Length: 205
Image (cartoon, rainbow, N blue to C red; front, side, top):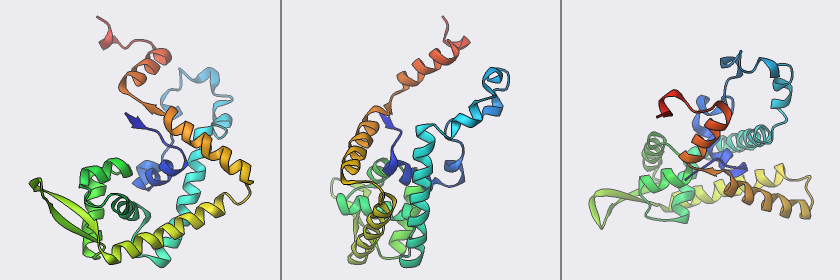
């Protein structure tokens, strides 16, 4: 099961570069005939979509965090996510790190190389598989993780400063429900595709 995430997952997903910052769903210009009846209101309503607003919040939070990381740490938020995983689960391999932090294999590999060069992460042989490598934080890596966590928590506090205590609790509950409800499978994608566009020619017996 994959997850479309809410604020935290959108935050860590947003660091995937330019491609990750494109329109959230699809380019409306690719479907001019099909969407022509709706062209008068789709652009106006797009910015009112909850998913779009979540992405805007995530981009803003990420931007502020990146500026603080740039001032006070040698790593970006994307690299810090690797430190966060290793602080939570020392001895993780690259597959575990990429899966849990929503990083591609290339992103995971590059971050691990950079973090090892900075002496923030150490590589150790897997005791159960001599060909595999596991990773742990160095003392410097733990300090960097803790510094990054302070930044992340302070940015989060800033972002939520206008919410009351009750609203904080309500938001937390809603986000937890969203994390669960936005999990989807290939079968879900097929079902929505059929609902939207009907059976494709190659899926008809």
